[in-house]
Image (cartoon, rainbow, N blue to C red; front, side, top):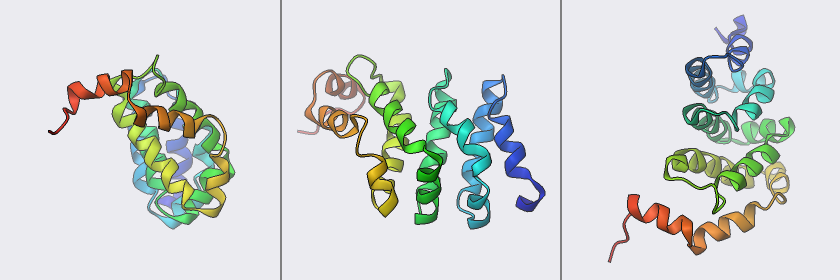
Length: 161
């Protein structure tokens, strides 16, 4: 099935006008991410996936971040992510959506998937350099330090005494 151009077709569907089609296409791509053969063909998808990091529909952004998380699960996937130039877009999106002005509980899954993917990238020799800029470390430090972010999350994740 992978040899029959399915990745190219699914990657083109990431540009659909319909948000559900974009979401389901991303989820299907993520399902292929564990296949070494499929990862070799992911070049078709990266440009469109990078655009989806700022999709207006949260479910689409979450699905896209999940794809990056799945791809980053091995060194080959990490290398492909880095070669695509995606880490810059991933870091910028994370910093923007996790800022004190923008953070929302509803973005938690999206931010978690992105953060897991970026952490996985740091285990790869090629990945760690790609994330060293863009204010990522500072933003993660702010999240860990509290403030409005802590207030937002307290409601959903109460502190254990």
